[in-house]
Length: 167
Image (tube, rainbow, N blue to C red; front, side, top):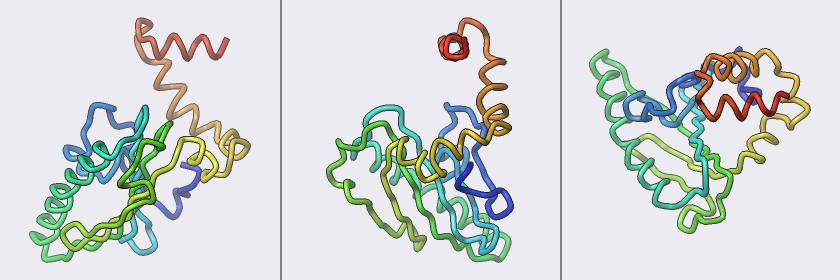
């Protein structure tokens, strides 16, 4: 959020269910940002809770074929050409298990150029301006974290862990 100014980028996927697949949501990652200046450049983020492995990345890349086909079909029905340049950043706690994708990856999927990169959550925080910059985004934190977790039923372990952190 801090790295993608709302005046220059439009977000899709923020607030989506964690159970929503990228294919069903017609997204290139868990959340994606479309550049409003060129309406071609997309930065997508695919979060992974543990250690990222080549198999997970390849499965995700394979799923992107259907997403690109869907958007190309919709554009063709409107008499338009679907044109995108997509960067997908996989964000995980541990990326050391990557072998094939260790140094990043580029691939054309149905004539759409994709760049794949792999970073840790710590790297993402740095890209967003560092902890001090992100800490100033209290309204976003309230909207995207605090209010959502606060509405969870008390039996959810996530809510209890969050409450314990606040105390």
